Image 1 (cartoon, rainbow, N blue to C red):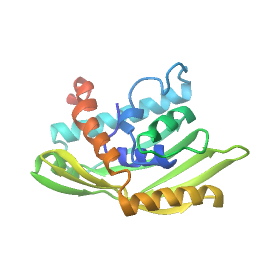
Image 2: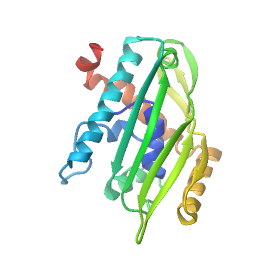
Image 3: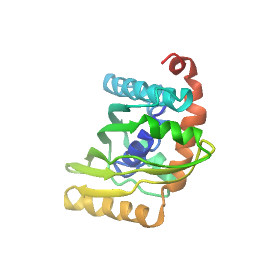
Image 4: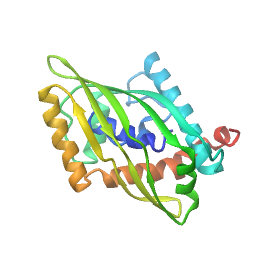
Length: 218
């Protein structure tokens, strides 16, 4: 299962090597990351950490408590090339690298999460998140740093609009050029908005329900 607004961080990570929280919802499910490939010990540990973070988010979103403080998680995710290629096909974006391994500290205000689910309409502004990624190139590995500040509009507990608001990018010139073009297009035209909105709603209303017994006790 995924991790709601870590969605924004991880979709953002998955797609641009650091994308929208893609699909934390899809990538945090307790299952191997790609068909036919065995899950490594490292991938299993990463998945477990994401799952625990997702349970905390689901508990706040659906139990509406606790309604104060933060949900904070240290998240690491490794995407294989074949997984990233498939993900990016949804947004009609090509993936030029091999694997991507991204890490981030995600923090979400519980009061904001509760308002998103309980008010008739609410614009949730989340804090800035820094993402660090390692991208596999043909002859070298690139280290990049990206920043996003997600904003999501909710109506009746469902996301209807989302923006990642990409900020600074630190990366070698070759990687930075490609990432800058993609993030600039998203900031200007919201090319990932529909993808992010779909994943947020899938997380809240479908994936959380799959682990309901676990988070209800939190």
